Image 1 (spheres, protein in one colour):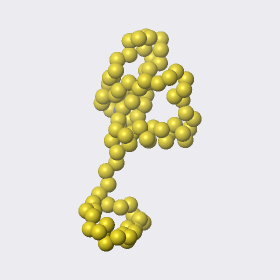
Image 2 (cartoon, protein in one colour):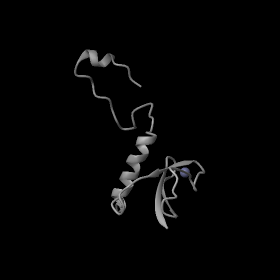
Image 3 (cartoon, rainbow, N blue to C red):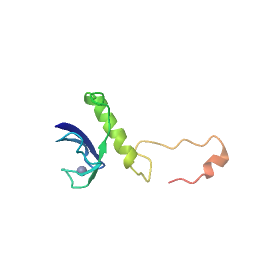
Length: 92
Ligand SMILES: [Zn+2]
């Protein structure tokens, strides 16, 4: 048996033990029943402890489905443009 890793865009990564060489490229996610794709990695080098792993997971998710914002987050103010033409650029 070998351990294979899959990544769901909604739930993140999960592992499945299967006979060696029998892992499909796509699998049903056990969390949301969506489509999870297989993650190919070098054996033993993809494990990151705690915070590093969380940031990597977040980075992977943002590549698949980045958050869409329609306005600046609260507390952030727009800087005045340094050139008048920059002030006429379209804004969200
Ligand atoms: Zn899922």
